[in-house]
Length: 475
Ligand SMILES: Nc1ncnc2c1ncn2[C@@H]1O[C@H](COP(=O)(O)OP(=O)(O)OP(=O)(O)O)[C@@H](O)[C@H]1O
Ligand SMILES: [Mg+2]
Image (cartoon, rainbow, N blue to C red; front, side):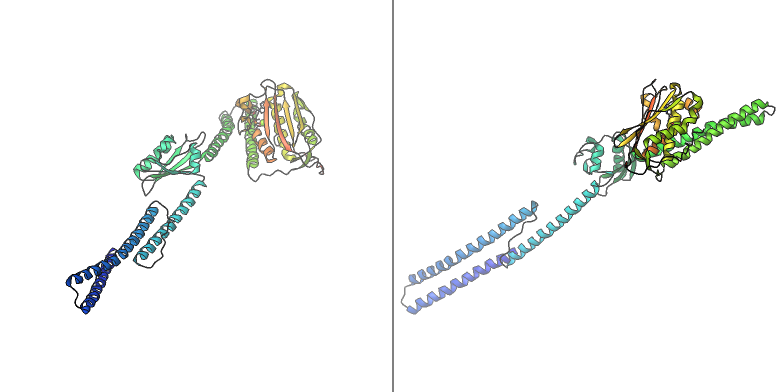
């Protein structure tokens, strides 16, 4: 390009020279034709000719120089804008010469850069949206341990803003996570870990992998729920095994004694067989309770709800359990119930009242009175089973609804309890869309409350005539 420009300028110079020579020749010819002119006049004439040619060449050269320099300046300014990131800049191309070829090429380059950057930016935004929609926390680290970027979940887990370009340790202190990332950086291999101190009460599984461009990427998966479910499963198996082992060991011991002591008196044999029967009954009851619990905990468990009168439910519960309290010296009475319709499954309600009244009888017998009632608490009806026994200490009130939880294990076992009754009741009430809770003051008895939704009051009433005794009411 530059060579072409020099060639054009040299060409121009020669053109001017030829013009000059032609002008000189013309003037000389005229002068010679006129003959008689002195020599100095000839010199003067050639000087004029030179001056005229120079006067013509100067503005032309100046114009070319100014125009070339202006276009070069425009190009340099354009290159500056591109370098500063203004990829929308374009050069105006009016003429068609060597410069315009260069200007078009520069415009093309700028357009391509613009398109490439727009695509990179759109991919970056897509990736960021994808990372932010993930359930997992993700953080990328440079080989020096500085944060490259992190997603939204990672910021939530850390509970603070994780700034890019700052050391990760400034925002996250969990030694497991930091150690896992360091190990992945050093070994250039995938590393696994488990972080327990990132967020209170939450456990995260960590996968830290080295990045091809240096640094590492850590992905944090919340396994708190899985861990809790796993722990609950382990506890459940341990509890069931323990509950079964106790009566089994007893049965095994008495059977072995009966076999070994051949000369045992009929009275002793009878006594031992009685103990064996009691333990077998206990095991049978435990398996029945476990089956009932499995049924109500199953996602397929559905209650067959229908409109029933709250007062009828209370009367029915008292009538059903009445037989149990006859010889116990305890009064089982109604504290009143509204004549409102609730949505309930009569069989399931028998199970709920049966368990609650049985508990009141077992643990609150000393209070001598059990009251069953209901009251309108719009949009629900709240049922209560109240005893005046020793009550339940505050710290146990929430936990008694857990599987196998018993305030006094020995006493409960003695009375044949498995610790599953309230867990079953809770699931049944929740399947009705209701809530259940207990209130108590030590020494003043315990009251169990549960709620049922109101049914449309104009519906046809189904009286709970099909009275199914609760599974364990007869035990
Ligand atoms: N009315 C009550 N007064 C005092 N303590 C109670 C009362 N009801 C329940 N509890 C306590 O709550 C615990 C859990 O009750 P739950 O009905 O779940 O089990 P359980 O009665 O021991 O056994 P199960 O009902 O399976 O036979 C009981 O062991 C007892 O300690
Ligand atoms: Mg019970």
